Length: 192
Ligand SMILES: Nc1ncnc2c1ncn2[C@@H]1O[C@H](COP(=O)(O)OP(=O)(O)O)[C@@H](O)[C@H]1O
Ligand SMILES: Cc1cn([C@H]2C[C@H](O)[C@@H](COP(=O)(O)OP(=O)(O)O)O2)c(=O)[nH]c1=O
Image 1 (cartoon, rainbow, N blue to C red):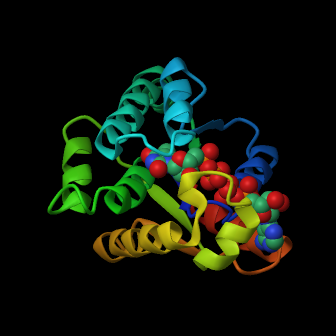
Image 2 (image 1 turned 90 degrees about the horizontal axis):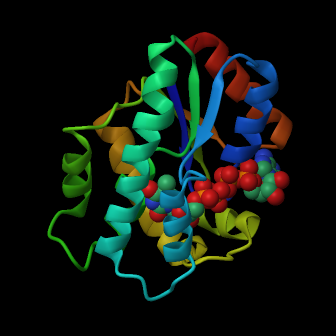
């Protein structure tokens, strides 16, 4: 089973991912961007305020393709539970936001480039948080962590939730850490 964690920067995904690691020690825990050289290229692009948004989409997508063949598909073939901190929905939400001035319909475009090769998640926990709190918690250190941008990204995530309501479990990320983790554990225990 492929379980993904999604939400704005600072919404508590990594905190939950680490807590799930202790609870499900035999599962495979992974993330995007990855730590491969493709992921390093992505990190360079994130640090570059002038990076071309379309080039950036394809860097992230290259990292995803490598992640699928090297980590996700082999682990799923072995029957493991795979938990990924960010996955294809991050591209659909973030790059749909960065590409609004470049393409007519970036949301559908980003979805369509994944369809022929990707492995859709079986379930996704969406950490729902207002952009202001998300920017504060994440520290606003990169270009994606600014409030205006996070507002645009959240709108795209909401389109995804509307399009596939059965895949998503919405977690109220404004709660305390303990309350969020209780909801995460209840949701994952129920799913697996
Ligand atoms: N429920 C919460 N309430 C307050 N702060 C939180 C909560 N969950 C996480 N944090 C803090 O917010 C910051 C971002 O959390 P993190 O799990 O790294 O988010 P993400 O992976 O979504 O960017 C960290 O400093 C973390 O300790
Ligand atoms: C995976 C992915 C991440 N991103 C962005 C979200 C983050 O701002 C940044 C790095 O991701 P990440 O390190 O997961 O950030 P955080 O832990 O703060 O949530 O890259 C995209 O724009 N597209 C993508 O496909």
